[in-house]
Image (cartoon, rainbow, N blue to C red):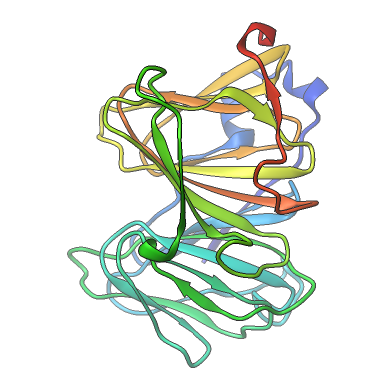
Length: 278
């Protein structure tokens, strides 16, 4: 298991970042690697995210000095969504079979979590988001068909999309983690415009289901000092609570969002009208 540390940043400092510094601070270019678990530890609300891509055998989610606990979920909870081939997650003695689009919530106190693929030629890709927890809630499988769908946007505004809520009060209990998946309809390329901030929660995005020549322009920064990141397939973006977040692609795409912070109220957002952006 490999762990990358990303420290918090102040909006006044980010104003002076050049492109390379922006990417080093907020973009995670490598989420999946064969037979590895790659994780990023963000000091924004101490959220950990990354990917497990087993090929030849089982991959174990481990703790270590950076967590200071006996095992990974000793004081954490975990959300998982599989974006690859069929496989399974094994939390303690349970076995959760997961096809592409299936998810799961794993509660605090689960001592071992491991991952397997059915086939090395079509490996599972388990995307993980973890946040600190104060209470143990039941581990549950969240099949794609059981996620809570919400249709948003219109074709006229090129933002017709469906949000699927996985780790969410409407679906299962969690301490602070909220996680879901958004699928844009063919011909739609915008997400979250008008953009918004939510000072009470950070957010991390994983963009995927993109062709090799497709890019997403992810907008960040404060409303009066906007910036952007050019994002490729299966790359992730850290969005601090003070930052706007919105994106537009050169073609349609899918993304997973994960949030942690003061509340789990999905609609608790501070919208910024386009005319107020600079």
